[in-house]
Image (cartoon, rainbow, N blue to C red; front, side, top):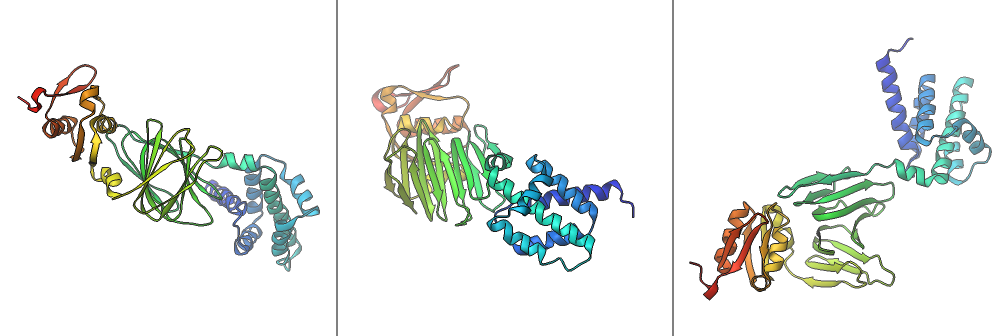
Length: 339
């Protein structure tokens, strides 16, 4: 029976999906049997599958398949036997299944021999926010990334792990735990590995701060001889690029997650540090001189408009604000009282 172009497109799509499933290290016997049934259903299926494999690996699959069947190894043998066990049909079906065994064997050989090629085929997705923006990202495994202001992350859902790179900014993560596929965050010269966790990561000024709200996170600097820390709920790990050790404090993790409700919590922090943090949220920078920057602030600030935030700083610390072309300058009021 003739097929229209729509039918052909559906077959090509199905073939591509079967290639992805069959090349996975976690392919199951039931899936191989289902693939066999699909290949036997039509010569068009087998042809589409052969084309999809050729596109995926960019190699001469017929030659590779013959070699793989002639000299099968380990897992290839077991897959071939699964298919061979179904050779109870007529000659045409038998030939199709024999080809399928070879093609799948070739797929596994290609996976073993061309790991870098397979690695490059896994897409990397980049997410970014501008100043003042937040964005929630749900990954394919159900894990959730919440990006804070001026943040950029890259995500790769690989066969053996889930990999995130925090290039800049801040991200809160709620990870679906999977021992077979660890969740890894690389930022600066630190690697964080999830152990069933909700945690927040801030990268700023050549340093990383990790706060765990639930579960645990391994913090491992990449330098040789570096100490690996295990952070648990309530722990905050702090690491500076280039160091071989990190610091740990313990406290209320809500301070690190307050930005999700548009708040910032500061506890006896130097105003210079507060201003550096606030400048992540606003285009016009807030500027303080050395003397003013040494003032200490304990406050919960609502992160609404910049003018409102500056007004609260003026009230809390008796400051005067003056706007210039370069930014908003905060200075300590002489005598400690604003006019």
